[in-house]
Length: 222
Image (cartoon, rainbow, N blue to C red; front, side):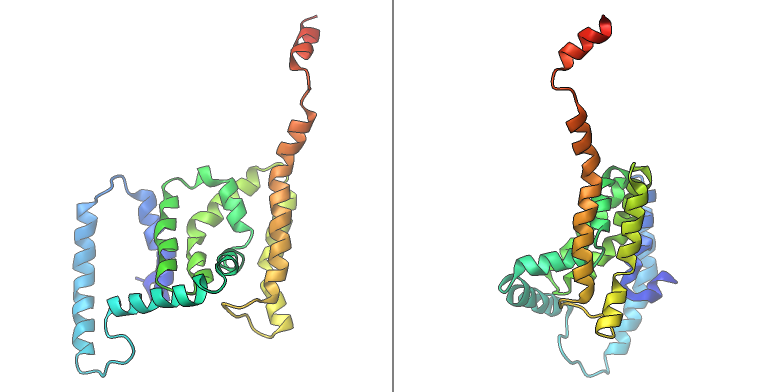
């Protein structure tokens, strides 16, 4: 209930916690408790709205249709590559790479990305929607950083990513959304450096491998 006061960010607490603890696909007792909890609230909201004048979109369906129309007209029809790139750089930045590198640590929590990315179809604030993936992306990425042989460098990159928003405060005075911000010019190089740090050890191991492993085995036997 306390997390619910934070509006839609409740998905970052209650839903992942339940997804981690659940042991079956259909949890009838939990569904029944949700109905008992939500029904009085929905009934009270309906009663309060009756005497009110309705502005904008009176139904959720009409709001979703309007959102999908905006997505097509603004995001897909103009510059889909920029909008998709901005969704990742403007939300969690290098944490997406770190989370992907440690994806095996997320387990069932990765199912949270289904409702997170489903919001892309009905709203244009893709960077804000992508931010709701933090309950699975950040923990998986943190485990990957700690277990990586270059964790000191990766931790430094994480610290730089955490301070990227300072560029918005210094240059333009306040952070924004759905526009090119100074923090993006900081995040993009950090993403490139993070990718290099994550994959460079594999390149080094491949380069140090012997071109003639059969000969090496014969020498060791001798």
